[in-house]
Image (cartoon, rainbow, N blue to C red; front, top):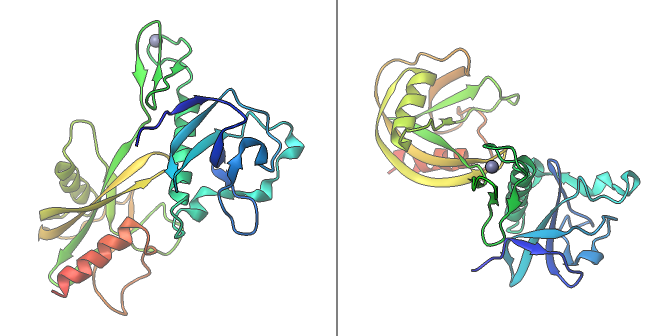
Length: 273
Ligand SMILES: [Zn+2]
């Protein structure tokens, strides 16, 4: 699929519209649906932009994104109840909502790359790929993607689950951490696990990945087996962690659409093989 990312605005443009306002998206109507039609069909009063950005195609039609922050015609036109928090819709069974996450990341990229980080000149938006370019010094920027390793560790019939200090809900999950510069994903798994709970793991296997747009992570999911060491929790990050049998005594875990839960379920199948 060839996508022209940055398109001069025209009233004839018709498609799906992901209108982003900071961490929210415009979902009018009772069905909470991303609106379809021409720009003028949008029920909010926003001034016409110079360019729009296409982020994909859905059902044969283009999906566009707009940042509503600067184009609202006036404050009073902001119907806040029709903007919905992105976090609240991310796990709904709705293919279109995957575009919401992408739209948010594209808008964040454009907002944070208006000036060149090398020479300070205003950046131009390139139209054949999603990037910004500084004409004077040729510095080019792409949307930031920050890889995070996330790993479910099993020991016999048990799984290691931990409660993160930053998590306000009483939810136990698998371990996760950002990949550092120059590190392989496998090295990041070994380092994170050792830093967070003090154990060594072996037989690391890739399972799947999931974009996590808060703000620009890519979760890379693995399973691994316990190798050696005693649990020794990192006080700064981990509030509690332990080995759990699958079944009724397991603590509350994240919802099904999260990669964390999918790795837990994957481990459960491995244990019951
Ligand atoms: Zn520059």
